[in-house]
Length: 317
Length: 321
Image (tube, rainbow over all chains, first blue to last red; front, side, top):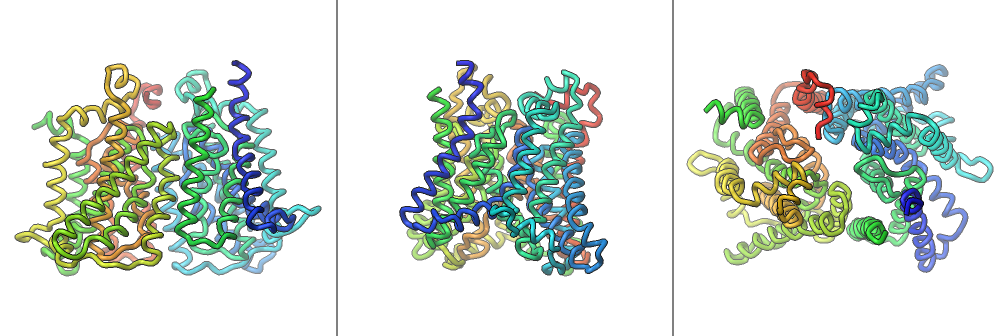
């Protein structure tokens, strides 16, 4: 029984992978080209954008919070990086990516202050931060699509190829590896789940819970910013509300990966699977060329069935 | 009187803020305060207020409903087909629209109660489903609502905007009686402590289901009222209202951890949020700065609400239950 308990997250994390394989097999029945290397490599590249965002979201959700400021941290990072890179000044071009990342971390800390110090529910505070960022962006760009372009590095990060793999995918995997190491090996990783389970008990054990919350939100901000940089590199520009379509799929990917929305329990491996599943599902639905309406309906129904399957399995244990 | 104020401190503050904002709005409005201006304002506020009530019923039992906007969009699209024709047709149409709302709410509730999925995740998925259904009905905005009926609900009666009368009726004829029933008490009991409510022999699953059904009903009412104001069906109205309804209940003093707050507060929060938006419109601020100021005010209002924790003497109290 004990071993089953310990293995629970791992079984949960396997779910989306099984789903992904089923999707590929099912999809290839109708569209044989899905099994092609080219198509699958392209999916890995596209999945990387959602994947990087979902890593940050996993950290925050493990903590028992949620980050709704993803869209405009992503948008802001894209605007900052493209306008620096498009300025033509070599120094600015070099600074484009670091500045955008710094911006993401900074917003993350602002999120953390509201949540950890003012004790405002993260769902509301990050929402307010998001709308302020939107305001700043509109004020700066005048409501038009911001000028600027992606630097060579940004384009390479998003669309390049290295040893047969899309660079975007490799970046995603590298970040996943680093984060998995942090979660498994460092005290921070353990504190994160501990706060997710019971913040009061963690605080009473002598952990400085506010600093853990700051760090977690800063990491999430960094991930959102990285997603923004890569997306800007992919589109060679930043555009208004480029982050909006990513918010809910990010949360869905994390949850499908077996991470509890209440915090404490979950895994990065599961999130990676969730991202692959959602990316493939979206892609296959658009390959099928069905209307927007049916795409929404099928998406909703499949997510609901995945969640129901998970609870059914847990009951079975 | 003092006890009454103390018991409803959160609502009292919210209503006071609303009064100040409304006075500001009416004095800065270029045409001054007249029935027309107040009616337009009240109509916009009531749509969000009904959405906020839908959110309130999810939040009070310690949940959150991300499908409020989607249910509004779906009911709005249904209304654009059915609320037209003879008197009887329209009566059936309205009943059907509200039934769709309740059905959506019950579906959410069933996923949460029987499927044991967390409300935030379940409604995230159903929002996609409901939006899809709405798009199926209206791929592009269109359809029509009976103009006479729409006018009857969106103009004024003897100089008082109908929207305000509806708002008062919702509080006086629905909320006050409900609060005195076992169900009304049960909402707070389940929201405060599900375990304690269960151990006191309360039918927790029934209360949760009822709460989601009422949430669906009010999301349906919000969609219906939206139809009266715009007299057309549009499947794309959802996302804005979902997020604003959450902000509105928090502004109105409803605690996201459940069990604290009232329907009146949620409505006041919605009125405040919309009034801030309208105030911006006529304030003479540069239009491009308005979204930023709006966000700043929202964040400020929420931060002030949260600043109470800075005065807490025992660090342990801030962690709550």
